[in-house]
Length: 458
Image (tube, rainbow, N blue to C red):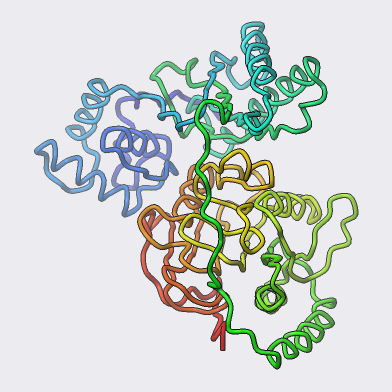
């Protein structure tokens, strides 16, 4: 099948508008609207309600008939608006340094001599940056493509480019200083065609290396977990009940076929708290056939919950489950824990969990991680993540929203659910959903079929 370049939409493609338009043309429209209006439409080539609404908004701004249809006048206005507002690179996050390797050959991931020179310079910068608590711990490598071809194909091509660069960079760091390569996380991901920076396709065929270094700007100091949020008052009879039911559920779960899902619970240092989280996670693990304690070196899969101590544990468990289940994409992750609007916590009183913001160097060295450290390559396009602790969706700048924003940058239809208030893990009510239909979040009481728990603290 022949392919065409659609960064600038060819004339005549909008004639199919009555039937939704060609997929490539609609994707061009969505990218143009995102750039012009500052939106976050999914560039999926589907002329859905969100895209129609954005078209009407653009038409109203231009004084056109606001009918949500891309006719010749609207298309011409889009072209003119793009020319006056060229595509620009996404802003870098504070505390990061970014290097762009562009001009990859069409449909190839081979490194050119100029690319290797850039990678060598980055490797030297990483080695120079290793100074105790100021050491570089994470290097993100993101592949990009031009818009020729399907979205799924370009995601795969971008990932090949990113992995090729990450391997080269790791090898160069190891040659310069073997002792530090194993302490650095090289995270390879892809954005495919979704983040163009130019109308020139050679500039969009690129890989971006982002070095997170605390000497540029330290991460935020994480507030410690000082509350009892998420658990009931300690009652001896309840602890005995937990032990009895857990034993029964574990016996029945051995006969259930494992699915690519996970139920994680915080390994809190207070037995009452840990038992509560484990009980809720175990009960739900049996319902969704979640894999217990995945270990890529010995994949004896069984149904059950998995404890975690740190954010690094959460991420490695997701990746291990992906390997142990035949590299099937992980469809659902439930996390039962102490938590707040800034993240899900590590062991009670410590700051080693998974957070909205970049953690400070001391916390990161102990296992704290940021949501952007999660690799979306192992997750299903419609993954559902349910946060069962307190306040994870509280406020406009919450942990749940940051997690959704990270997933939505790579996945087609992710969903994140978090609680807006205090309360006990394992109960329904006061949820907030983050999804394509509600990227800023919307209040919901029940989230069946993803979860329908009753009385997590009763």
